[in-house]
Amino acid sequence: MNCILCEGPATLFFIEPRNQYQYLHCQTCDLRFLHPRFRLTSKEEHSRYLLHKNDINDLEYQKFVSPLYKVVLDRCSSDSIGLDYGCGAAPVVSHLLTQQGYSILHYDPFFKPDIGVLEKKYRFILAVEVVEHFYDPGRELLKLSHLLDPEGALGIMTLLYNPTDSFESWYYKNDPTHVCFYSELTFQWIVSKFGFSSCTFYGPRTLWLSR
Ligand SMILES: [Zn+2]
Ligand SMILES: [Zn+2]
Image (cartoon, rainbow, N blue to C red; front, side, top):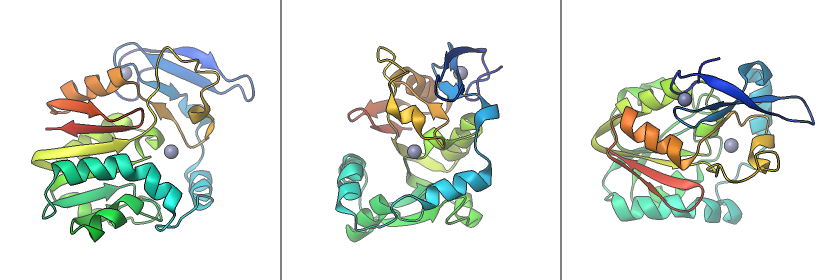
């Protein structure tokens, strides 16, 4: 089948022994993704998200998002307006940024389906543990790039796949709501195709795409 990010040819590269789920790899953009036939239904997906701990004051989760929080403090002035895309039920990073004076709007297809916020332009968009859930990453990333102002940036948290690591023992793929897996190469491809000028990585799960 064709790649769900770049539409290039994608080939089967792994079958999970536990459940026979098939994973495909694209040589063009280096995306790895679950074959669409093994995806959860939207209802199943929603009920999985309801099992997540949803508390904006959860200190563990505050620590988890701190790399991205620090990048925003560093790179965006506190009078800039951001969008927390796929914020879930407990938008922790935007809660922390709001305390620092930032204005942040929220969108989530399950928990905050306010499509009006998708008609504005933003200095920054944050997607925390979101992009690995995209069923149509090409379309979603195009949409997000259009929501940025000319100086805008997209801050992402997702665990990057390092192609030298074993996919079989990589825990991140075992969450049934995780359907696409990006490497550093994938984000370099995204930079060139969606009008960004650079991508900076802050450790294995935080990155910043600048226009
Ligand atoms: Zn691809
Ligand atoms: Zn996730």
